[in-house]
Image (cartoon, rainbow, N blue to C red; front, side, top):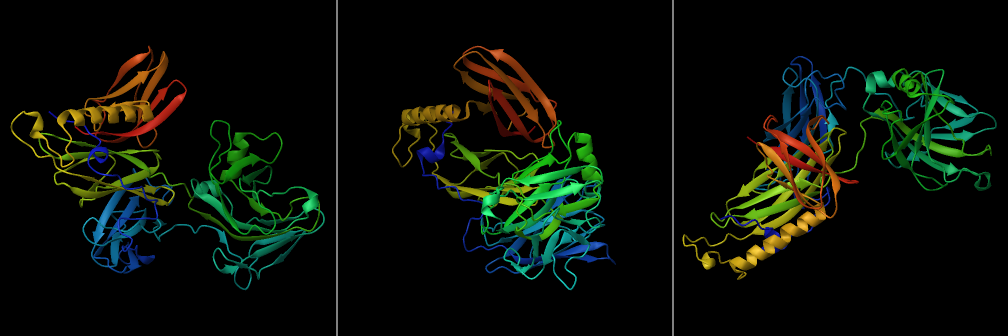
Length: 509
């Protein structure tokens, strides 16, 4: 007989979750000075980094075919982990023609640092446009109309000079029609980013707080990215990233930083996409209101990888077998980013994708989930748990299990039943089995007649199997056939009435 228990509720206290900046050991630091060098003679790249104190080795993560670095990559994207003893590794481009990469320190058994920031490989067919307003000719290919310019102020975000843009009477803008052309053709999926600070604006003139903006044109129509953040004079610097993307469903693209809007009356999504793909001009302006006295700072107007929020938070479900004394742990993500890769470090020297793991030895374990996203951000969340092996007897007597806490078999069964009920109340449903083989069952308790639908979705967003129907009040078990689904990690989207949640499931055959 196998008792399904939430171990940390029975035997141990769960440690608190750490945010992505925390790792298994505070003394295990990530490498510094990560860099990449292209070797033309050998058609390879060498990844280098400085040694980290206490590191016994390193792990390099390659995201092969990263769409943010490799928009024209012909094959499917894949993840590769490479253990390295020293502080460099050479990657043959014949094997991995395009990828992004990061590296972490290994500081002993079950102890590693966070990964460094994900970087594109150092071989590019086209440099990404970027205006830093440094050097002897900081204006570059920018043209001023109705503005004053200076390039001596320091931007504390990067420690370099920046552009000071002052407003004059009449139309005021600062434009570049050379460096940022055809953005969608060259950089679709990346972001147009800039740093901005509002230095002065007449308080009585309206327009405050000011939402930073950047303008694109194809020579006929104009689109505007409007940032969510509102600035008042003296608020300091902010960084804004606008997605280089097409309309979807008749709606201009947006992200956590803000939203694209039509700047020319009567525009359509086709017009918007034409501006993105066939950009001729990029513009910024110091104007906030009708008073010709505003001053802004701008810097680092660059096309680069987008930033996304961390989605590595997870729930750890655990169970123990009364017959073997082993423990099983499974990871369920709170939120799934379909464009991300997730790696679970189970705390005993093994790692895998999202799924489950069996522990044969009692002890304390740090289970950590690392999210590696297509947009180059890395998040890491850890949960610490422990379990004590039950004393197993070959006799069927109730006292064959004697945890040190003194729980009887009936106590454990009662607590386990209550824990499972609590999980179902919190989630609205339970998924069994997970990992699955030939089928997945969604168990739910409906308070009234409801429409319930379930979809199994791959990491590319494709629906592989689905089922929907109207179910009466009471306990329901909805089964989805997975016999024809290949091994892998998938998203199960469950919609009950107006409530929709997603969980991660594994298919193992």
